[in-house]
Image (cartoon, rainbow, N blue to C red; front, side, top):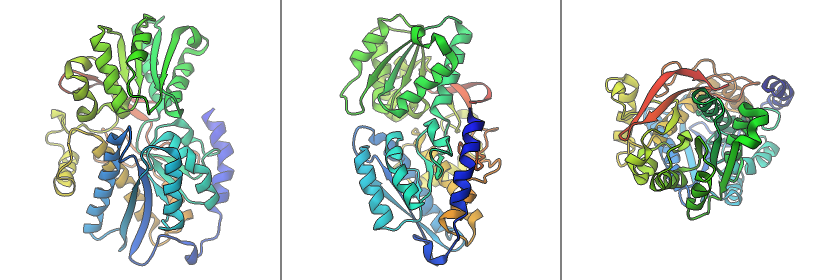
Length: 400
């Protein structure tokens, strides 16, 4: 399926890249500055995700203190959208039409990136390293100017959970708590990929809206099914509620947690550390709290960055690690673009990454892209919560 999508998208991407480059068609770029933009949920129901933007702004402050990129400072304009798609559109239009940024970088949210994609495509503005694991952003036919961020695709993650559960119990049934948008639907699609015709009889879904105050009733409903496995495809606030409620009602299915909600400070601690014991998720970045990385040069570099540029940041929140990785991969792209900072060449370089190793990715996981492959990371490792921390187990696996 993926090869067909990729082949169909090649002509679209090639057409975009074939536009002649003219100096006057390079908004956001001067002799001393590269101006880029994003929106983040600094307020609203998933404000915990705003840490990603805070980390990325800090990363480019570090880059600028080192002299910038090819003599230019990077000015990342990061605006609050409250996790409301219409506000994302409004703020993105401001970034393009008023602030005249070169491109959009790491905007947060599946529905939010979907809402701005058509507008950005019409303006021929790249939508780089989107902060969403929705598999559709890896479809070059549908989103020729978009590229997923340094994270594993949601759909692929769900496939891995389904396969793991079926290894433990071949006739396992599943309960899934899913946000009622493309984020949640990607997990359902991953389950269906694995279960096939069994999906309708083996899966019970309870959905929620990002504006809901609680998901307690959904968890009670899911327990009543007697499912063997529970998948929590939820953002941090609701993930914490789900973990706490399953513990309170003494429900102990094999539980999987979306890797966007594994943070200690915003999920595991509010839920209660004991309540999360035994939960399984996946990792692709190094956990700075893991003793295995105590002497790791990459983690030491990250800690130095945090101490100087985000001194008030909670090092238990790996969104800071994700921001660091996203910043580093974009720095790589801009360096590769050299002095040709046209939107076309920046996109070309973003789609030409070959086996890039980042110091805060797990060993064996590399970033690679191409015109037919808009998914930078497609490997993860399983991890389990011990009641104190996440512990990785098994080998690094492909998510395909």
